[in-house]
Image (tube, rainbow, N blue to C red; front, side, top):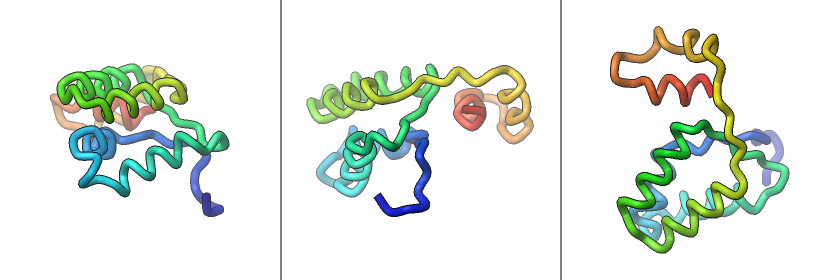
Length: 107
């Protein structure tokens, strides 16, 4: 991995959905996820809401690729439950109905 890249990565839902929905069209995204999963020096982080979203999308798609990617991600990801003060600090930047995005930002 090139130097200067972060050692902790928050896998955004856009990339995950892209990889889950159409892995053949999203080869670059899938390759990036697999590279991150393979690199032990990179820590994957997420929050409980994000993990629930990953699982929901994988289940909706009923794709073997999505199921395998989800399993691999869940084996490596560190779950962070952001504290209330971080969520409150991010809240002014999100509209009503964007609570999950606010928690993601706080993570």
